[in-house]
Length: 116
Image 1 (tube, rainbow, N blue to C red):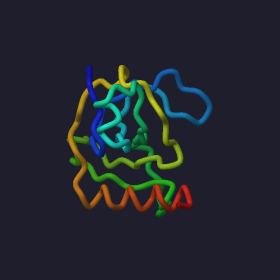
Image 2: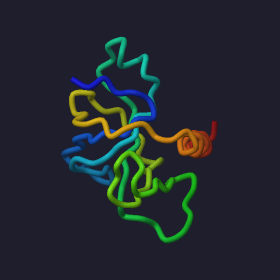
Image 3: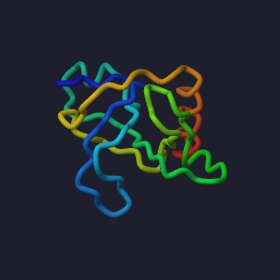
């Protein structure tokens, strides 16, 4: 079983697709502090990624994640407005940790989107 770590990208099973929630197995960023999963919490907060890119800058709703980051085969966007709490048993593969610069951009987007 995977214990999700903060700022790592994972392949996560998001089935079934419901409404605007993305479905299928897709890369997601864990944004929850690692200590919660290590302590036995069975869910983790994630941000799904999509390769369906917007042509204009949509910060803070979306943040661009470049191709090659954590082994991603295509440019992607983090769907900040789709933050989910997801069962950790549905985390399939750890694709790696985001670079610190992207972590900072995501923190700013989350803070701005949630008006914190």
